[in-house]
Image (cartoon, rainbow, N blue to C red):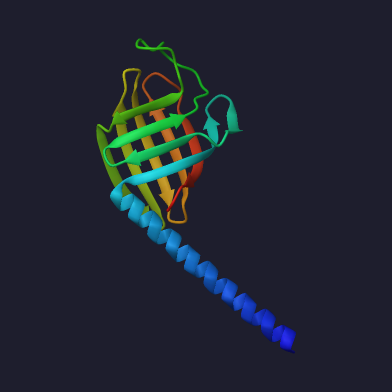
Length: 155
């Protein structure tokens, strides 16, 4: 009887701790979105021509106010050779041309971002769920579209 009571109390404490962690994560995501201060660690990419691939843990995307830091791999076909430099993935730090934030669902935040580099014009759609999961879709004028999945790095 005592063992059953202890198991029930432990289960309740665990449920309560999980709920508390979930609430803290949701609050941290909400604050990061409001401040436009996101760091997303990439775990996989989904290519148009080559399917889905896992990536090494050193790739990321950062949104810092009005600046986008993109350190993402690229696997796809360029429709036009870049004039400025050879293709080097989606690696740049640029000021954002246009940014629009929305909340299409209760647990989802979205950013639509346009950024221009010397290589290409890009449109990033960043979707962040309130539990810290994220997806990024990238379209450009001169390359195949590509998407990424990852997790927000929260304080």
